[in-house]
Length: 238
Picture: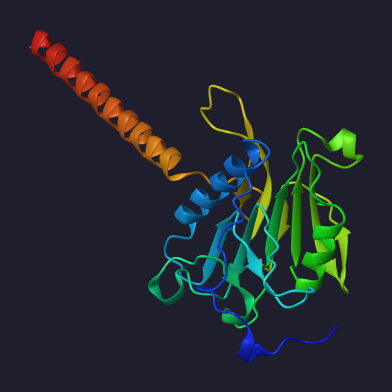
C-alpha cells in the first residue's frame, strides 16, 4: 500500500468529527461513559491520557485517510489530556505522533458491526494492544463470549483468560460488575486494580466517607453516654 504524503494529509479542523450515525442501543453510549467518568476520577492527577467515546480515529493504514474507524470507546496513553489545552474533535493519528490507542472497546449491538472481523483487522493494523468486545445481549447469536479481551501478539489478536483482566501496560484491569445502587439492576464494565479490586467512583467514595463519619460520630455519642452513665453511678455511690 502506498503511504500518503504526510504534508498533504488534512488537519483535524478539516476532517468531519461525527458521522451522525445514531447508536444501536443504550449500552453503546452508557457503558463507555461509565468507564470514562470513573477514569476521570481515578486518574484525575494525570495529564498523559485520553479516553474518548464514539469518536473517530483517523489513520493512514487504510485506503483513505479521510475515512475514520469509530470505536465505541478507546484509550490512548502518552498523549495530551487536552490537546493544546482544547477538546479534540477527532483523534488524528498523524497529529498524535502516530500513537495508536492502547485499548479499544466495542459494544455489540443488534446490528452486527464487524466487531469480530473488519474492526478487529483495522485495530490490529493500527497496533492497538488490547481490544475489548462487550456483547451481553447477542453473544449466543454471534457464537462468542459476553465479555472478551484480546491482546495483540505478533500482529494477531489472541483471546485472553481471566476476569477482571489485568493489563500491565495500561496499569488497569477491566471486567464486568453490577452498577452500584442502580434501581434497574444494570451490568456495566469497570476498572480494577492489580489485586482485582474494583475502583470505586467519586460518588461511592463520598458515600463511604459519609458513612465512616456517621459511624465515628455514633461511636463518639455512645462513648459520651457511657461516660455520663459512669459519672451518674459514681454520684449515686457517694
